[in-house]
Length: 424
Image (cartoon, rainbow, N blue to C red; front, side, top):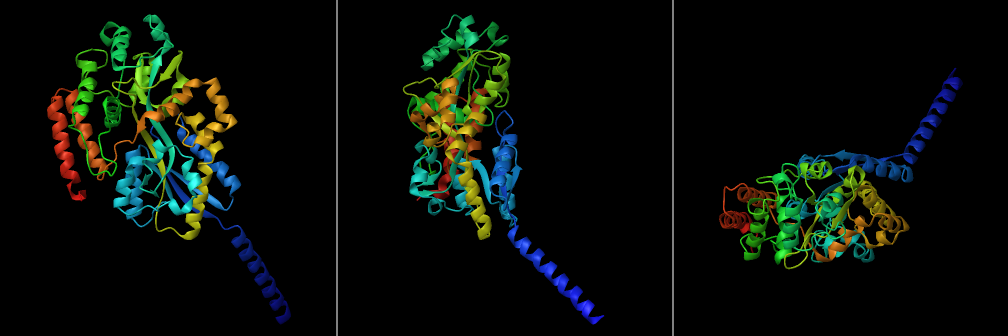
């Protein structure tokens, strides 16, 4: 009986050892990847597909995509996880969240993680929100600029050349007047959204006039500068004086719907909506640079990938591997095709995939070409508070509560108070 008992015990130990050995070989590292869904189209499904492809290539890593809603909602949830002692490995957040994340000391510097050649392949206009000096803190991922979308069929009906979009502010007003039907009841000439990201739309007008509205170090704003007031006056005049755009506030999310339904013949919106418009427009449409005042100009926009601090080494390594996977040129090219976002790496435009797509659909190249005239999106310390101050000021002007001078000067004074602790 003792011999039989020992034999059973030996067999059990062998089985347990085999299981233990097998477990170490099959051990899986799990990482969390927070992601916003801020534009039309089914971006979540595309991300799910990327995750599935990565896990096939890396069966020892499991990526948990977490969809946070808007950029602001995603940022709130990510920071709650960090403060709760459970930071995610990766998150796609606004490129302009950099100063806030640095202030809270929650992200890892990426400069030592990749070689210089890798960083140099990203467009300078996108890297402007990714680094401070020589230190790189995030990777450009779903990046955009604002472009002009226009309905070519509506142009023909208004006796406008559908291959000649407006190039200047004067053109924009002239075309918009011809495209506005029945005082806007049947069709507006133009819509520029003024909720959610109105500071971003305003930046385009300021850049077209003279310059940006904040310093590179995120410590100053220039809301009351003469060129900023000129830009704001034009924004207001489109509805109040020229009557080519709805008065008051225009919802960010409804502008693409209005364009697709024929409620407006032109719109300013993110290139991140390009694929959505391509798939749903029942008319021929064009994409063009934003019209110039004294020069062309558009702020960049969209999200970067951030790597968080205080991770186990194996999780950090898995996260770096996933970042490399997401930013491979072929994958960046496909992401641009699937979503409409600008491909962030120059090498992506050298792939046959994107070359063929641009040849077939030339509207896709406009945003990349406009990068020559692009500058950083509004980014400061205490960025959320400064953005709210300025967004509220823009709405107060557009709704007639304040004059241009009153609204812009008040916004500047309030922003200076917020940024005072960060002055040298």
